[in-house]
Each structure stands twice: as C-alpha cells, then as structure tokens.
Image 1 (cartoon, rainbow, N blue to C red):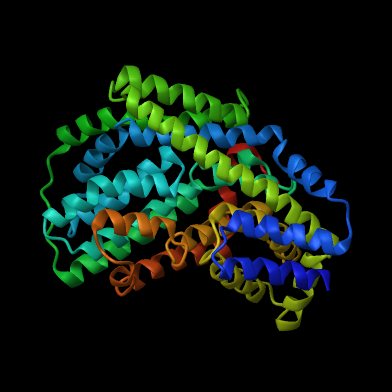
Image 2 (cartoon, helix red, strand yellow; image 1 turned 90 degrees about the vertical axis):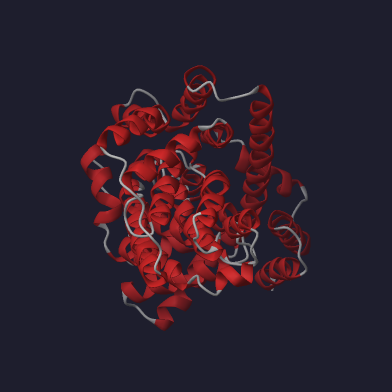
Length: 430
C-alpha cells in the first residue's frame, strides 16, 4: 500500500503541474506520514543527501559553464566551426553541429549550449535562407552533447546516485567517445536533411584562416584538456578540477579574451546560484525518495517484472531505454538520474552492463528527454530564439531523433564506446 501511495501521489502531483522537485518531496512526505515514521526522517535524509563533499563540483561546473556562456567564448568557437566544415553542403548546419559540440565541451550544459549557440547560429542560419525548423532542430539536438562532456555536472550527479559504484574520473573519460559518436550521427542527419532540401554549401576560407580561428578558440577549448590531464595524472580530483575550471574561466574571459563585463559576471553568478539551488533541492528531496524506494525494494520488484518479460540482456537494456525515454519526457534531467539510477543500475549490472556504460546510457536518455515535450527545456529555448512553435519543430524532428537514437543504440550495445578510454587512460577494470 505504501508503494502505491508513493507512486500515485508522485504522478498525481506531476499531472497537476506541480514542479518535479516539489512533486518528489511531497510524495515522499505523504508516504512517510502514512507509514508513521518520525517527521525528522525527512530532514535527516535531505541533509545526508546534500551534505556530500563531491557535490562541491556541481556549483563550480555550473558557474564555469555560465561564465563561458556570458564571456564571449561562443563567437570564437562558431568561427572555428564555420571555417572547418562550412564549405560542406548545408554548411551552416554542419558548422552548428561542430560548434555545439565544442561549446558543450567547455560549458558541460545542454541548456547553456543551446542558449549560446542558438543566439548566434539560429539567426545567422535564418538570414542565409535556412528554414527555421531546421536551424532549431540542429541546434537543440547537437547541444545535447554537453551532457557527456568532462565539464558536465550531471556526471557528478550520476556518480553519487550510483552509490559509489562508479568512479567520476572513469565517467569523465568515458563520455568522450559517446560524445564523438553523437556528433557524427548529428552531422549525418544535418547533412541528409540539407541535401534533401537543397541547402547550399559555403566557401572554404583556406587553411591560414582555419589556423587563425583555431588559435583564437584554443584557449577556451583548453579547459577540457586541463580537466582531463589533471584528473588522469592524479594532480587533482574531479571535485578540485571543477574549482580549477572556474579559476581558469575567470582568467580567460577577463584577462585573455577581455570579453567579460562586470554586468555579465554578476548575471552568470546569479544564474549559477539559481541552478545550483534547484539541483541541490532535487538532490535533497530525491534522497528521501530513494530511501523509500530502498525500503520498499523497488529495484527488486522492477527487476522481477522485467524478468517476466524477457531474460535476454539485449531486451532488458531495450526496456530500460524505453522506460527512461518515457520518464524523461516529463521529468528534469537531474531528477531522472537521481530517481532512476538506484532502480535500473542494479538491473543493468545483473544483465551484464558495466556501471560506467550505464552512466552513458542514462545521460543520453536524459538528454533526449530535454528535447521532448512537455518538459523539453532545450527545445523550448531553441524555439524561443528561433521564433517558431514547438509543434512546427516537432513535425520535422524525426531525422534528428533517429540520429540520437542511433547514438544511444551504439552506446547501449557496444560497450567499447564507453569503456575503451577509461581502460586505456586509467586502467579501469570494469
């Protein structure tokens, strides 16, 4: 009965339009009160969930991403991308994919990525004669690669939701190949649609111009290399790397690019504080939710239900993907990670999937949810920038969805995409 109350109140609050964090917390409170547990359990679980040293990485990575967003880094990355691939058919679309991938590496946030790249690329593509729905779809889908990059705070959330079963360093290394696969799939989709619609190709500016644009963008892109080199060499931890990322970004935007203003700095700080508050609230209330799911053995029940459908690992992985995709359509990325990881990670591990590989599966699924109504955050941002309705964009979204799903299938069924780099660079034994 308690499990029914937990699930019914949670989905009931979501249907009523209650924000996800409050829906999670209220459903947990209702269940605790029905169970007759002391109210102090609520505060104990929330504090234990948030009072973790590794969570210091979250505000630092968020702040670093916001500084990159407001510090003028995007323009230099866009110019580099245009010079590299702008001469291919549908050149601005291809440039958009590469630019979103590069900026996703320095921001670590799909929402920051679509905000920065969308503000530059969508108006530019519309001016050059590209359809608005194409410009928005390319931007919003390519920006999702930020969830897999070393600066992604969602990796930190997953590592802690996994209960210590996975190394943050291994996750950071593991995200690089899936990010590359996602970029390639998006390039194929963008090119195919460009050819079908007859979009023109740009002109190659020449290698000297490519080198100049690379030199201008390189200081911003170095943040990825600094984080990876520091963690893999053991010079600093993943948590310390986030603080170093903020320090480097401040030095970069104030003293190297000299593009940061005091007003933009304060705007970045305010946005980082707001995002961090939302994430920590989600972590706190999700800890209550996880406590109750553990108490009622939800993971074991879910595993038993799946085993009745099939005992084949490939089918179990497919079912997990479908469930995560459905949940991601109406839940925030962080909430999906925090709630679903304790349920599905044990099932996936029992079926033979490594927890690092499952982390990549989880992140891509949650990123896919960011582009799916009714809670498609990146899609809403992209549509607002493009001045187009979500319905109009959804009518031509299938090629880009297909690219994302193809990348997801590669990561799900080919473990080497997730595990080769951690094993090569860190001696990961998983």
